[in-house]
Image (cartoon, rainbow, N blue to C red; front, side, top):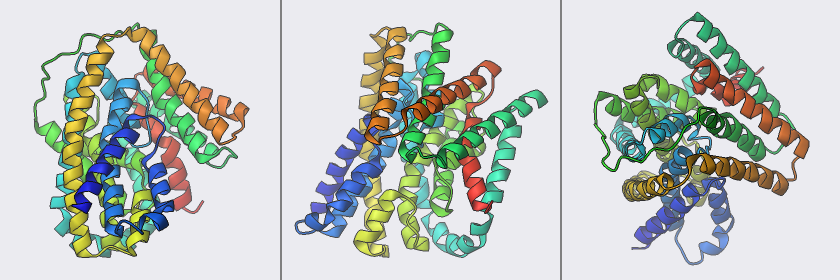
Length: 413
């Protein structure tokens, strides 16, 4: 009963952190871990770990609601902004929410079913692949540029955008700006504000949302579920890979995001990457003795490693958390859609842009960041984020902002 109670409290906390932009699950995890000396007097280490795991799973699924409906992205949801926003403008908000919920739930099931294979294959592969991560990243990037470009000129522009965003990412990660502020400026400008400003320039309006969703589970959706689960597992296995790289891998496995069907599969895959990564990063403690996320690090410290019985408890915790989070995602997502359709879309968009800019300023003030540098970074990110819209290119190439620094670090340059 203690574990079950901890699970449901964790799901509730994850729902709150997922729905409020700017609050990262690792922040709450750090607070809980810092308080563990007092909590362990009343609760078992397993109960605290179950709370952390269920919170991370719930957060990973529900953070797609503000990302898609308001365009407020975080590292794991940045690429979902555009297809989710487009479906909302088509009156398909209910369908988008169901695709996200299906992707998160299905990917967790895929990872659990593949666990026996992972136990046999991954430990020996880990040491072999670790030195070649930068080569794998370059291959993925090259394939993505070729696959998502309609002609040679688009390929040139896509490469240029990737390089420019990479230079910006490398510069910021080596600047005096706090990392949290840098990430917030980059993601908000590149994927949030730029998308909404373009939407305003096209005189977009929010149509009445279709109360009867037209979700069809076709081969593209099924492919997206497996793509998300596999890509999330790759993130949890290889050091140096984060949601940015996982998004690129999932996009390739799901077939891209340009056509309507591919867009649906891609949205499913994005949700799958985020949620399955939260689970597999914990499995990595048992498989290779290497925690691959902030929450996994806290769990590893609390338990001094994870044995097989504890892993089974965490798997059942994840199944419970993702099942309850799925229901919350459907209910809260539908409620958000009904609320938004009653509002003036143009005015709402401006309010969200102002709110996101306020968040950037607030976090900059809290972290005592250089305001001039924050403003320059924010404006540059917005400008760079607008270019793909006007050139008709895929915005995923902007993920060079994180991929290029990862390549440079792991190549030892």
